[in-house]
Image 1 (cartoon, one colour):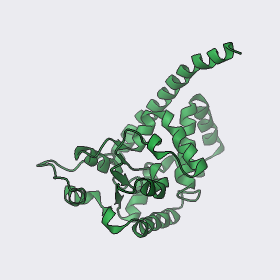
Image 2 (tube, rainbow, N blue to C red):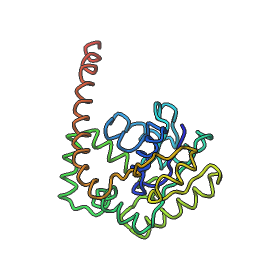
Image 3 (cartoon, one colour):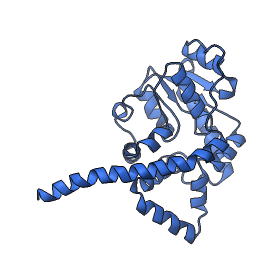
Image 4 (cartoon, one colour):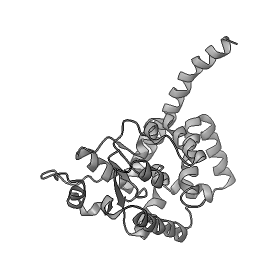
Length: 246
């Protein structure tokens, strides 16, 4: 592991991941990988249950990791990979929460304030797609509970958690190993920290803004549900074989 991103989602983690891969520090493990490969969901549910994991196995094949749910285990990852560089992405706290509330926290906030009809509709969807149900449970367990103490709907509370997280990282990680980074500053501080040449005449990646998030969210969730069905169908023959052997 070469780089561990310890900034919360909606602080530019998608842009940073693309930038790191462009600089040769990849592939990068991000929430997007879990959506594409729902079999990874169980890794994080198990990690939440145990409080730790076999990180070499969970992150096999990746050279960087960031975003939720990995950030919920940032201390464990920083300790397990003592030679990895650590990047703490930051932004203005109020702007961070407002962005998160419109994107990654939106469904959790709705769930916290849900009506009986909304809960019934969600229950139907999760029954149709077990992996989608597990995905929601993973986010609830690792992010809403482990990081935010059970609620992301309270703006003041969430911002307090955000600020405490930044302070905790600065105290915990040696200064010469840590970059506190605003992606708006572009290539220069990142490349200097990593000792990598900046790409010539190439703009810093910008991805997953609010408009892009909403445009892609439905596609990502449909992909998760389709992958869930495919994964379940692949498991059925094996289950039938085990039954026949009894």
